[in-house]
Length: 344
Picture 1 (cartoon, rainbow, N blue to C red):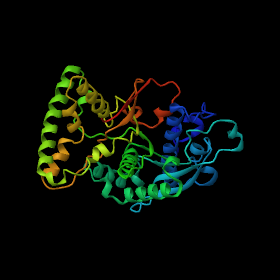
Picture 2 (picture 1 turned 135 degrees about the vertical axis):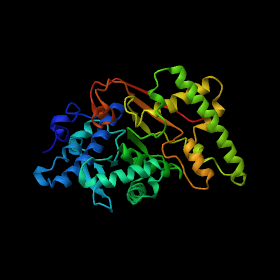
Picture 3 (picture 1 turned 180 degrees about the horizontal axis):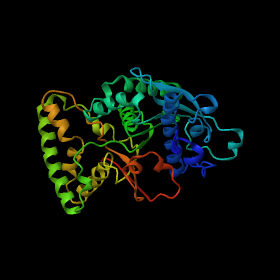
């Protein structure tokens, strides 16, 4: 039995009958719906819903997108992503299409159903260990991104993902950015694995812990750089990524992504108190990745990025399921605040 949330007619943004492609709110809503479409594509597969019984198509057809291709995991045959093509009807020519994509590559997160759960959890573990880039699912996703950009150009392609899917999109976006290609990206509830400092009520205590962590991390980063002086002439890869500013969407009640709030806001505070140099070093690494690197193993922390436009949903969350869910991001009356953080 399908849940109400799988039906676009019951839980989709029916108010969005005309999309303003220059509106950040409309772009966010459409991107979130396309990601939801991938979730429902996999649920349709699991429940063997085909043809008129399939529930996924309205999630993209409502916005005049077509399904170009499903991305299928080679380990369990689950649908983890999709490539959507924007096909506006002739009537849309009366409205500006500036800001619209030609193609969107969207990636779902973990589905807690038996058919895909074990593979999704396996990838979640790879993500925690900074090993997502070594998985076959990511290789399939990365090849699809490269092929699409090569075929139509980077300005015509968007990336979008939720939870585990946002980690896939972030890693793909970072990989492209390292070669100078900056894709517009919508990352919903992206995982940030660290101690849950953001849940501490005392602002003074939070700042104290973050300051101490920054000093330790910066010191270890300097020590590691001194150890590898032969690479000194190479450009800092973190600085090379700074021109890419993906759109992050986080909820403070979601402990999986809420640390991004502290990550970026603390960096701003450190600049304000004159400790920006320390934080510019600390923001590139996590203590965990530095310890792994010290043991001679490669461990680039996936979740650390130099720049982003972060949007926080301050709408009260009834529970964790809402705070981490994709559905929140197309609501019409959200209490949102956004800020652009640029690495200098």
